[in-house]
Image (cartoon, rainbow, N blue to C red):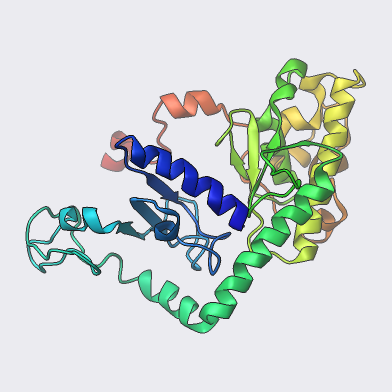
Length: 309
């Protein structure tokens, strides 16, 4: 960690020496609690999301809240509030009633107490342990999968932080993509990990401190099984469009329909792992046209005419 901090500090100093400012993405602090701080490495601005790191759910549109931290020279420029004059806390802060950017001066009262209680109950030792566990989980999974997938952006010791990136760009050559892997994971009972960020054509997996070894092992097993399905396509044993990858996820309606026009069994489609037979989570919908959905508003609510009736 000290070696990594030194590299980051050197990079930040180069930016500062050339008149720049550094914004640090504090999407989560799972690898940093108790080990380092944004201010300590020289960042000028950092938002610190409470989701994931501090017991707030992530995804599904929210809830989301986080604090903004700035260096001393930027503190006078923090926004105020017209009803409750504030401008944050700390050194060189100038309380003001102008520059309001949010209705609630202190953020979401429904979310912040949860994170406060989590921090108080964990204490410094517990927060440090959570970071160490998140880092351990990520490196354990990356090590188990390195013989099946190309794991990117590890350091000279082959280690990652609290997340690792699986390179799937080569799938395009064989008629598959990272979308197929993500959607096939739904058949195994897993929500898809982050896709095509920070690298297009890859997936980023973050096994946080709350995931047990047993749960990590299940995801490892699912990804190894999916690798086998990928290899079948690469080896020409099955066409990409006829693969369970391409047709995933498989819903209950698909599996129980009278017609079954796929070259693989219904069991392979819906119950690819032992645990999926014991505790099956059924996807609510099958394959959607992602691009069409992104470009066109499709409303499932009743039409105006139907409401008038």
